[in-house]
View 1: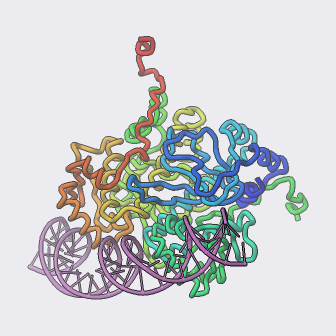
View 2 (view 1 turned 120 degrees about the vertical axis):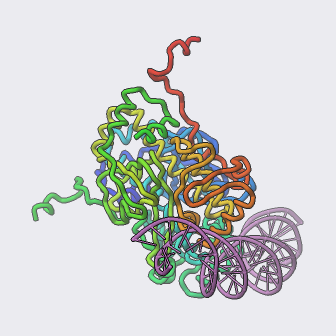
View 3 (view 1 turned 30 degrees about the horizontal axis):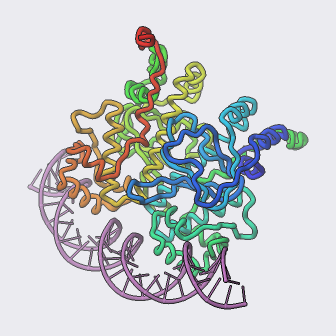
Length: 251
Length: 251
DNA sequence: CGCCCACTTGATTAATATCAAATACTGTGG
DNA sequence: CCACAGTATTTGATATTAATCAAGTGGGCG
């Protein structure tokens, strides 16, 4: 639950009470094995899933088997806050690695947002950020070259993981296969492999299927045409809460 | 305004009062010339734009000039219902053709959704459909070939335009240049040109830059691997309203 | 008429996919 | 600890797709 709070605090500051409320949103986490579906296309889910640990994905497949990953979730991300309106899922959600999820019922969400409008706004913000990310992916797909695309993805992962405290030094635990990167970027596995070699040769990153290390964050960002604005991680409005010392206001 | 109601009624039925409320949402329409920006990246808009006539787009550009269209709006579409939460626009919105827009203030939206929860739900639905569309575009970009992509786009335009009454026979007014199609599909203009020739040769469509005619909708859909489910246009729950004759219930 | 676009065509090149095979790695049972 | 099977990564060769470059064509309009 910590990751959720940590993430949302990039948008707004919370009172201790709000923080406590966020902490009691759901029951115990459930483990889901790697590559297992969490929600399948066509389902009509009754709750919302909070990723506590691991990486999950949103994906969509064509009838002939071609498959595209549409986005990923890190700890603290909530899949489909909005699911209550549409009748049926038009895509699937799956665990990419071993994942811990907490299910949150619709009622719980409604209660919470009723009582704590600031939390509602923060959850809404998170949803909008997710949309913004998918727009950036569209830009990547349409305009960035293969190498830029992968480099951009790595920058994004780094920023998102850092926002929830998953980065140590410049390394992120990232237990993915190259196939996964291929499905995220719309490239073939072989090509992903070659792109990775290029990025390694340029000394921008190391990646061994378990851990991603960014060797030169500035150069990588430049190479990828990465601008973190779309992640909207710097929007904490510094709303006045109990924690902000009053003396600071008049000083 | 008619187009908006017509669109929303694919999701829910309205009472006459709700319909009247929807009709008075905004002031007179403003004309925007083709290729003019409506909202620019970095802006912080105070209202929401309803497209009354013409086609508008969402787009995003890289610092070196590469540009990607992320989605388009037809009559009845509202750009950015959610703009009130994020600080700054992370992309731009522009008129693609001559466009008529009505600006709706935040306050007006809030009032309306307060008084008419069914309308709020419908607007929410529209937003979710837009997201669903952008997921489908991601799938297209990543997995569909150039020809499938363009064909799929045409199927989508046809369905969306039909949903607001813009289709006559199998023709949609579509005053676009091939450059526009290129920016929508992430292809070069030259390649779009060749793809169009292929689609014409297969007798699937005709398109002259003003009017799109779909010659064989089934074949086109098959070719494009098009499944209209993601447009969620068949979800009208048949909510009971004044217009539904009571006798029908017990009969 | 002539100019400016947009569209079209052809030729060439670059990016990426595909196919096939080799190598490395992981976990398992003996 | 080793052998082995199965999976993931890497490599090389080739094919395909789409981009780029360059040069037309054609239509609308001042």
